[in-house]
Length: 285
Image (tube, rainbow, N blue to C red; front, side):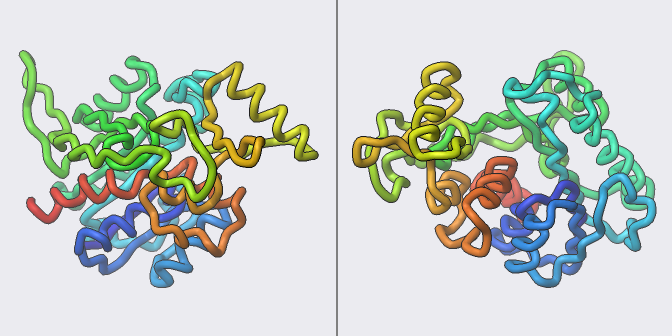
């Protein structure tokens, strides 16, 4: 396959294709974050970096030969954790650049496959706008089925579809993956946890250890948007190995990056076993 991956991040799409046995001839990555590019090239040196997604008209790509286009367009304006500017917000509106590129490829190769992901907390209005733009409605899958974290996401794709409902709407027909029964205590390296699933990939803040402890406890008490590990009468957030495990990656996958950089990419990224599950239907098709 020849693949274009927009907002490529840590290259989960390429890794998933590799893991399910789909051969990639050319893989074009659109990404601007330096350490994301560094990690991508470390694992897949043959990746062709094309740069800023808004400059796609300048890319040297034979669009008629593209078989699969991937997109994980920014969620910041859609997520409940953000300011809810919506799909027309300054960052999440980049989704429409993906639509432009997809429509261009379709005009040259009507059989092109596509895949788009975004947050489960997005407003129904925004999900409707995105679905009508793609002419397919998404499937909603929580990563809790395959890892030790709660990560609710929408996935749009024409890899496998069916008509549904009174008006014959086209929906993404990917079944839910089997529950693997993995809980949080199964993946931590040390310490004690009092919850079965991790809630939000993040790291602590504070200039000193005391300030960091106060910040973590305060955020846990006031927002619930953090999961703490108790260790030696203190609390901590997940370490680099645990973050990799929460997203379904090998322990050493982000070894070349600092914990903060790894957390940034893993926190924004896709859950590898979920993408593998979806891409297996490419092989079946």
